[in-house]
Amino acid sequence: MTNSTHTKLPMPSVDTEYRSGWSLFAESLRKFLELKLNKFSLGLTLFLILLAILAPWISPFPYDAVDPARGLSAPGWPHLMGTDQAGRDIFSRVLYGAQTSLSIGLVTVIFGLVTGVSLGAISGYVGGWVDEVIMRIVEIFMSVPGIVMALALVSILGPSVPSIILALSIRRITQFSRVARGSVLSVKSQDYVTACHALGMSNTRIVFAHVLPNCIGPIIVLASVLLGNVILTESTLSFLGMGIQEPTPSWGGMIAKGNEFLTFAPWISLFPGLFLFLTMIAFNLLGDGVRDHLDPRGGSVV
Amino acid sequence: MLTTVLLRRLIFSIPTLLGVATLAFMLGHMSPGDPAIAAMGLDLEGYSSVEPEELERVREELGLNKPILVQYVGWLTRALQGDFGTSYVSTIEVSELVFEALPTTMLLLVMTMSVSIVVGTSLGIVSAIFRGRTGDYIARMIAIIGVSTPTFWFALVLMLCFAVAIPIFPVNGSFDEFGWKAMALPTMAIALHPAALIARMMRSSMLEVLSQDMIRTATAKGLSRWRVYMVHGLRNAINPVITVIGFQFANLMGGAVAVEFIFSLPGLGSLLIEGIYEKDILVIQGAVLVIGVAFALSNLLVDLLYMIIDPRIRI
Image 1 (tube, rainbow over the protein chains, first blue to last red):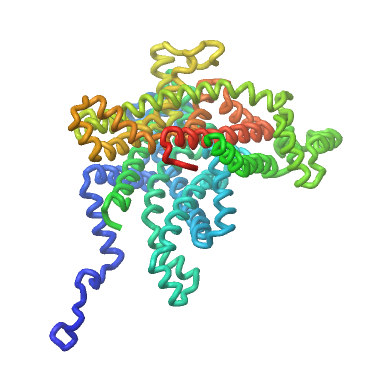
Image 2: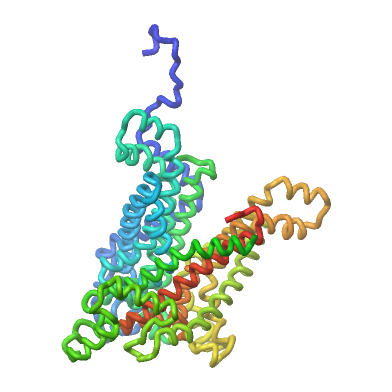
């Protein structure tokens, strides 16, 4: 390659080096983990996810095994975190509760992301009255606090898992669509998009192949920040009795149940609350880390 | 000048307010089954126990036999006049319930807002001034813990500590019964989250300002450190913080819903939750509408405050 006659145009070495998406991701991740705090938050997150996945194997009791003889027993052996009024093992229920919270959080954020980003992309890319209408509707939905909207919706649709996810998603859809719209607007006017038009590409292809991939940064940041947020709202819903229903364990529901026995059996609501708190710490720190890492003003990669 | 802007902003917020009203109206019509049954506070099982004539009367009264658009216009007209219908569960007018609940929630929100602004900005300023030192770490730790603590769980912990273990404050009860003591724990519980958010924003905004040349100039002029931080630093750093404070209303209201319920404070949040438990659609509609309108108005207020503090901003 290098010996021959075409030496007139030396290729710039940096730009032509082929980097697979994977190697870029690996490098980004390595830089991300240089910070101790990021190591901690990612570690804690992975640990909680692992607990949730492994719940069926590591929990010492089935989550719905009732044992009235051991009702309200204090933390000790064999019930590490004590039992509730029906004698169910709190530790096992906390582990299964992690499964409930994390899966609902993840599904909600993914659903919100796909719907919200589509709406925002249409709004920003098409512009005009379409933009006006979509953003007006988004603004209306943003005027009602998330938990109020979610409570009202679940109470009307009934507390099933799909309606909980729908109720939690609405607020996320508005948030994602706003951020996506903003990024699409700023990317839309870039030269390479004009070039795509000049090449005669279809709008769909331009949006999916060129505009959206360049908007991904802020969207990832928002997704990582919202995960904790959704889990918190879900547990608030469950706490108020409008979320996950018994006997399926959810941290919010367990805290509500423990509320009745707060004075003489505080462990019932203390431990699920502690895990909820740890989850929030993990996701908040992770969200912060991802934001600092991806924010262009921070001057790092992407 | 200010009045023109105020008028323009008011007019701009009309479509949003109308939208919120529409949303509240739609909530009542989304319920599966007969809205008349729902309005009577019955579920589908209760259907068979209702006399057909009674049902017909309720339908007539709610205007359910008219086209949906006519219903909507009628509902909106009445809502604009402050008439949200009569609760079928408690047979009290919904507007009366809402306006009875409003002062408690307003008081709670104002107290929470004040506490979180004072605590949040001070923490943030301390953090920025002592950047990288112990004070900064402690303040940042408090902030991250505050952001991560679930409000309703914190409320329970506070109740356990300061109402049960050390009975300084009442476990539950209204302002009328216990005065300020009834508001102390709920205020603390709700204020934690917004205070932490404000602290984080204040810290980063202050750090950005403190790195600017004018701060060096001010220090070089021989001004006291206090004056440099409070006058030159704070005044330039406060704007992004006000935006964050403005966005806290939804946050606060969300916190208030659970906390009012926990401490049995008779506010809008408790009203909403009771309405939900009783399936009292009209109460849910009324509460959602009032909360949405209050939110829109608070946004308006923030915009105006923004203009007064920073005259460069024109909306």
